[in-house]
Amino acid sequence: MTEAPLAGVLVADLSRVLAGPLVGQTLADLGARVVKVERPGTGDDTRAWAPPVSPSGSTYFDSANRGKESVVLDLADDADRALVAELVARADVVVENFPPATRARLGIDREALLAAHPRLVWCSISGYGAAPAGAGRAGYDFVVQAVSGLMHVTGEPDGPPTKAGVALVDVLTGKDATAGILAALLRRERTGVGGLVEVALLSSAQAALVNQLHAVLGAPTPEPRDADEPAASEPARAGSAHPSIAPYQLLHTADAPLAVAVGTDAQFRVLCAELGEPSLAHDARFATNADRVAHREDLVPLLEDALAGATAEDWEARLLAAGVVAGRVRTISEGLALAREVGLEPTRALHGPAGHGTTLASPIRIDGDARTSPIPPPLLGQHDAALRDWLATPRI
Image: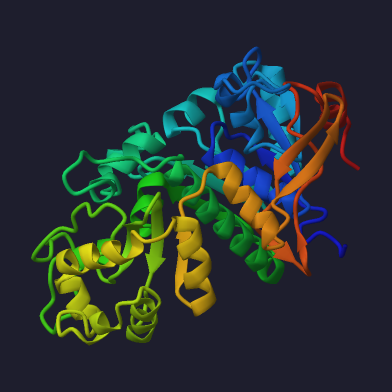
């Protein structure tokens, strides 16, 4: 294995719950030393988000905190707050998701610390940004999925709005924050100056709406239009169907749904041939993608009639062999099995004082290696003594 990209980088992780901790975990996977500061007694909120339970408290906590050291510091205590200030002074990166009022109450002066340590990269994660109108508004993934528009386009057409099956906005915000931190560190290499990285759950959620959001903004026109003025119509819930491509959705087979993604007219012709219905490709209603989108309600029953002759597993193998992208709906365990089957090595072993365990491998591969810290999520305050001694020792 080559040297870790972030070897020598110290991260002070003052965040909790998911988006911020995922940032720290990603930086740890890339080789940074990450010190997680937790409050006395309970630590990170997610240690109590169980079942399932684990030595750290919960598997939820484990999902975002491998590779870190844990120190318990009370930010309401002057002596402990001085240790936090010392950690910040030594750090290359700070990650936090305190509301501005909480930062002020705890005596964490972000602007003063950035001025005192110009090489520092400070990442602030919020729900709705730093402007006064949004700064005091608490942000939770589930609610942001609702207010951003994400839930409005998720679910069946005749059903209620539905959230994603995971805290998707937190995950995406964590990835956006990580990208911003890495860009700031790269700039620091050129200029010697760090800076402030800010991300908001609402902004990350809206960025993730990509084509759906730009359908609302509309295509560029010669006449300027108010950015808040909606296009002719809002995207609506369409289940698994794609608003601009057909067929690109779940289709029923003899036993289970099958995801079929046809991106070109040539692929549609192959699909029709494999289904034993080559004439469909020459039907004027389905000749082009635009035609198929316009006549989706006619097309889907015809395809499902043909698919009813075999199982989802059989069709998946047959269509993949023919070059049509398809896949049956798998459980999470079955998805891990598929990852192993295709050679992705999705899990890694962990070894620590609480015993052996397994973690999901990092999705980032560098020089052929999935960068995943082998250090398990820390127990609450596991590194208290060593870190307190280190922070109390004067720097040379």
